[in-house]
Length: 142
Length: 358
Image (cartoon, rainbow over all chains, first blue to last red; front, side):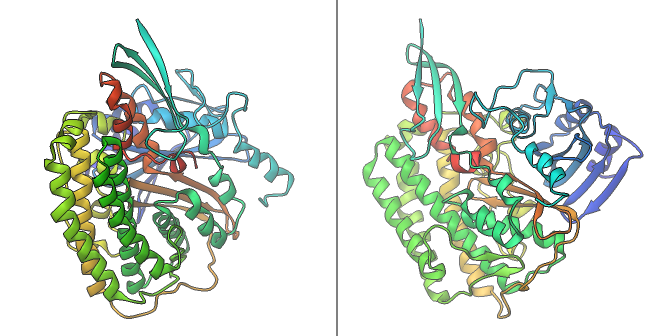
């Protein structure tokens, strides 16, 4: 069993996995992101970034991209009522990433107060989530 | 008694806006607050409102220094989504241009570092070297900054004069080896300003996800060209320089050694590039799906995530630039440092605020 397979088994068993040229993908809407972060940090993995996008349900799809000894592992999960536990306390690399996602999508990362990273103090968070609202009005076209 | 000094948004070493608020006790830095919001342009948001061809031109404008690697990485993600295979010659040309861009970027950084150190002659030497590279890139592409070399499925231009590329690569390799490395590594002024300053441990570099020359100067052996080869890197022989001291001097040395390796890569690529087509298809159909692509930009790993809903407009473009993960470690690097070294420590990570804010 390779290192990534071991990591995947520790994070969650029996969930949808896919092998692509750029790396492995794990899809689990109820992923325990704090447990994932602990396992990854212990394995010496590097958090590359987190990609967020809007869903029609009003929730957000988050992909945690990890570099494990040069291979990419992408863990996909969903927010729960717009929130997800923050992992910056476990993995410092997540600090700015979570701040930026909060600015762009107003995702609430629980566990700490996030100051704004990219927006001015008078701007409200969620500027990219406005696209979701507009798409609903225009029937899916940007 | 502590006092706070706001440095920026106009940075003393760079012509880009960033604010570093330094809290000092005497001349020792106690805390640092960083603000990087001044260049926010919403490039990701804009890319989701343009078709794929337009998005190539847009992402090239994320940065004025590493513009080419942005288009290369975006195109690689789209090619993965569309199932396109890039011709071998186009892969070699992409490699040559991206390495020339790395050389120009590192020469620019070395010049800025020399100026911050207060070594004007060295600054002029670095910029004279960079000018050769800029002239070559202009001759190859018609532009000094945004080269417009990459398109989805290939490149837009062939190598018009391979001999000129070889000449510049050899000149730069000789100049770096004979002049820059001895000057930066051995000069007393440079050593006094750089050795032991702005240290970043290997553990801290990994925890903060630091990438590129900054990570390699702290002993992390990672380079996307080696770990996940793209373009023609898997066919070329090159070393990945690594230092372990993690100080400003280590970051200087790693970048200079990388310049030598870039020249070697260019020389090999020019000689090995096979004849053949270079262009991609005129029309690209991108099916529904998602893909990521990574490349080694001059400042480290560049990451693109592209999602498609099957239309000609991407429904999500995520860009994670190397500076976005490198800039936060400036804080631990500066704490405990002398106030006079703040500008140099900041410049030593080669920050790009345009990339960071996007």
